[in-house]
Length: 214
Ligand code: SF4
Ligand code: SF4
Image (cartoon, rainbow, N blue to C red; front, side, top):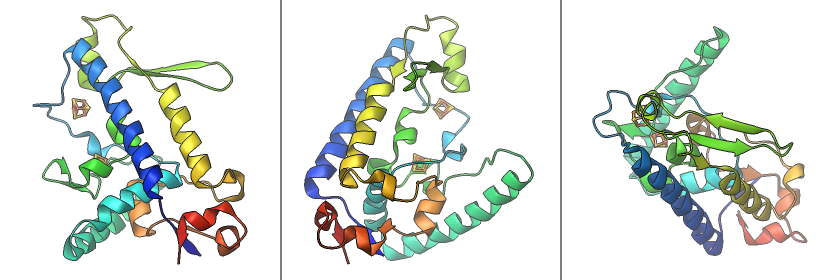
């Protein structure tokens, strides 16, 4: 297995996409006069699964910037997170456990947090490939605010998700179908280590040479 790494040019494009997500989020938040300031809740205990090698790689870039001792502390929390989440799921409950990367209410890899972390809160919509439109009302606090506003204020996530899927596909040299699907919590992404791909697909003769390092 060989570690998958993001080429410099792709890092720039991921960061550009994240910045677009933030702009869209800020626009809607402004329209709704919404902010997380003073919220009694902390969404970093929400249970989400993440689906791209791309974001997994980018998260690991941020994790590696932390001091070694801190990394070990976080991995320990991540292991405990996984055990607690499995237990909740086994009991048919949705896990509600603080993300191992949250310290004192703040994200310690803020620049490297994932798409879900950047878009959660304000209302959003997605148009599925079959044309069906799904709407998400936003967090409880935002829903309270919306009673005074029209539902036109929402982030349309479809173009953002499309860009993310395109980047993922490019990273995997348009061979996404050859690799195991990613369906992981942040804790699992940390405990598993950075993403690794089977060597045959990283070896000579494939475009993935440029992104894999032994
Ligand atoms: S990565 Fe950061 S923002 Fe995302 S859930 Fe964890 S602590 Fe919160
Ligand atoms: S997204 Fe909503 S629930 Fe989460 S911290 Fe912000 S205001 Fe609170």
